[in-house]
Image (cartoon, rainbow, N blue to C red; front, side, top):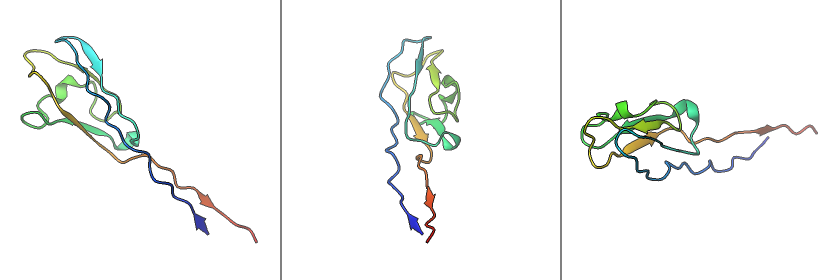
Length: 92
């Protein structure tokens, strides 16, 4: 049996975005297995700004601030990088 496992793709959490208060933006991530993704705000108390996200377990949530947000909010994305294992059978 020969198993060829290429390295998984590089997981990228996207680029910084700027939105005006009350407007909507989108966080974009690539290279993650969508079934394993979770987002969490890490500015101040962890999770305090999670309500600004449209979903916590999707790859590309929209974000909309309300009230009195801080000057910036850092979000951390966690998940398993996507990769495929393919098995090849050799018939003699």
